[in-house]
Length: 366
Image (cartoon, rainbow, N blue to C red; front, side, top):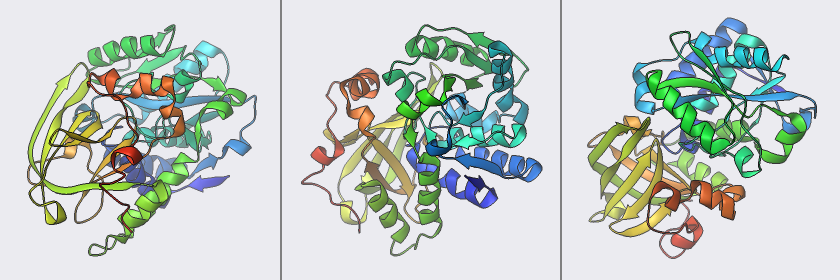
C-alpha cells in the first residue's frame, strides 16, 4: 500500500490522458477536483491486487457522457459520491474498495475523489487499460460478469437504480438517462467481490499512468526524451507529426463524434492524415491507408510539450505528434474485437494489430 498525494495526482492525470486515447473526460477538471479532495480530506490509500481480499466489495466509480459537456458542466464532489452512497443502500452493505472503470482522463480520478471523501482505498487496476466510449467495453463484460445494480446521479440531486440484464443494456439505458441528465452523469456499476475482480481487471494501471505522467513532466522539448521513454514503456510507435488543418466535432447520441485532418510537418511533410473519434480516438489513416484502429490506443500529443490533447481540446493549427500503442491482450481475443473492434463502430475493415500495420512503416522512437 502507498498513498496518492497531490504530486501523484498531477502525474496520474497526465498519464491517464495519454492512456485515455483522447477521451475519458477532461483530465484538467479531474485533476483540480482530485487535488482539492486530497487537500481537504488527506492522501488516498492505493492498494495492489495482492492486497485485495477475496471478500472485499469492490466498486468502480466513473463519469458517463460526452467530454465536451464535462468541460462546461463540471461535476461536484457530491455528484461523484452520490451513486456510491445509493449503491450501499441498495446492497445493504458498505463498499470496501473503489476503483477506476477506465484508466482515462477524468475517469481515472473519479475514484480518487470518492476515496478521499469516504476514506476508502483505491485499487491499482481498471477494466479497460485505456478509455472506451461505451459501458460494455470492459473486461468484466468480456469475462461474463453482470453490471447490475447500476446506480447513477446527476448535478440536480437525482439518483437512479438500474437492473440491466447485461453490459449492452447497461450502456443503452444509462446513456439515455445521461442525455436526460444534461449530457453527463456519475455512475457505479459492476460491483464485484475481490475474488472475481482479481480474475478480470488489468492490474497496476494507476501506477502506469503515474509513471507516464512523470516521463512527460520531465520531457526535454528538443530531444523529446519523455515521449521516447513513454513509447518504450508502452511498446508504442510514432505514427506521424502534423498540423491540424480541419476538425469536425459534434454532439450526437450522448457522444462527442467527429474527425480531425492533419497536414504532415517535418519528416512527414507532404503527407495527409485523418483521425476519427467517438469520445476516444478510434481510427488513424494516411489517405486511405490504415495506420491504427481500436482497440489499440491512439494518442495526440502537443509537439512542443509532449502533453496529450483530448478530443474536445483539439483545434485548428495545433502542431502535434500522434503515437499509438498495443492494447491489452484481452482486447485481442475474438470477444474483445467483437466488443470494441472497428466493425463495432461501423468501419468496414477488420482489426489488425498495430505491430502488423506498421511493421515496415514505422519504428519506435528512441
